Length: 339
Image (tube, rainbow, N blue to C red; front, side, top):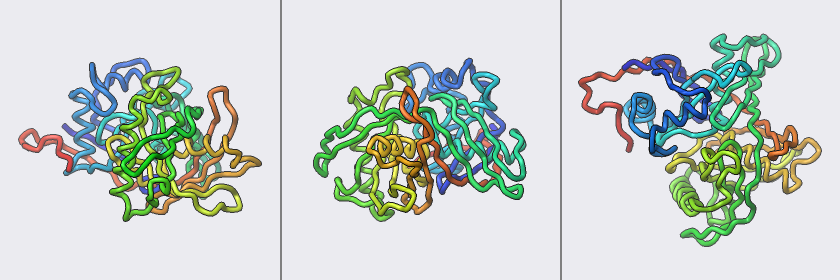
């Protein structure tokens, strides 16, 4: 097995793009191809073994990857209106949305020449993902990509103030569907702060809250059951407002205890919908959203929509390397291991 990738990071969160070595993935849409990736009887966090999932494990496990790795398989678009499609994956399986990955894919599409872009100006890259069609506006100055704006599928608030019992007491949780379902919790309500030194406690709290919401009806997507269930728990701190609007620091715990190093693109969409409902994003104000490592996204509500609000999230993405991974048939570790 030989797999070729181009790697990026978006605000510190990795994204590994497979450019060669992928077997054909049957299906007429990206959502159908994700179902194929999961396999008969598989789930988003427990896919059935197969050639496609061998590649996911190869790229996310040691010694070629790590437990925080994220990436995507580039597949055909649903129709001719998009440039391509993508199946998002992480160490535990396949997700339905990924804002930081969309930003990285936009940068890659322009860098590789797949999508033409001006030396000065903006190129729009349209991408089909399991939750729908998203886009990345790639901003260029002097022939260099300076920022990427991710426009998400509509974000809908599902519940406010849900009480959840935790080992640290009862907290209230807000739920929003932003291509995936996110639960928002104020870190201070758990006696915590979003700081690198508290990551073990934050991770444990995020996993506990996600498990507690497993049977919560509001986590079910009203139109597509494949988008149901809490994907990520956003633990956030309130910071002093900037002249432009709210200012928050967050860490998103997703899948089975994976930590987003970026401020989380789709999670930022969830926060934007909630802040807009609270009246904090009127008059063109925007959210400054900081990650646990200090990187920043800015976000805004671009438009109202029958299914919620349309959000835009801006950040930066940079290429970190190009790789040709191989699997030696005599390697007893095979596709690798996780610690």
